[in-house]
Image (cartoon, rainbow, N blue to C red; front, side, top):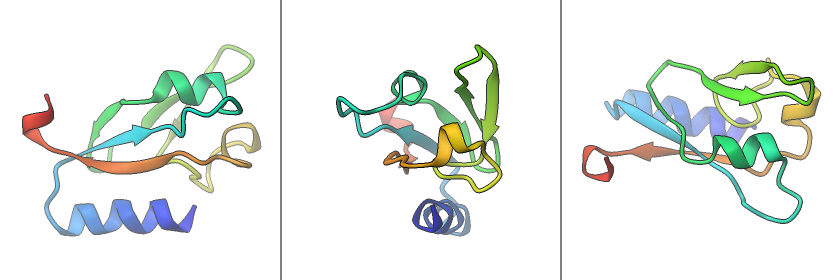
Length: 87
């Protein structure tokens, strides 16, 4: 989504070095997004998100417009800053 794209850009501009994928963890959350919950990546690195066919899709953030419809449509995940003290 635009919100996640903006959040990623703002984190990078603020010098935040790492970010994490945060899933909504609702009953309707895709299994691949549930599995991605908590993934940490350096700024500019892509997240690894599973596909129904068993493959992996590389995404910049939740709702990445370059992602497939199966991983983007209806996604309620967010990208958040990850700080050293969280490790």
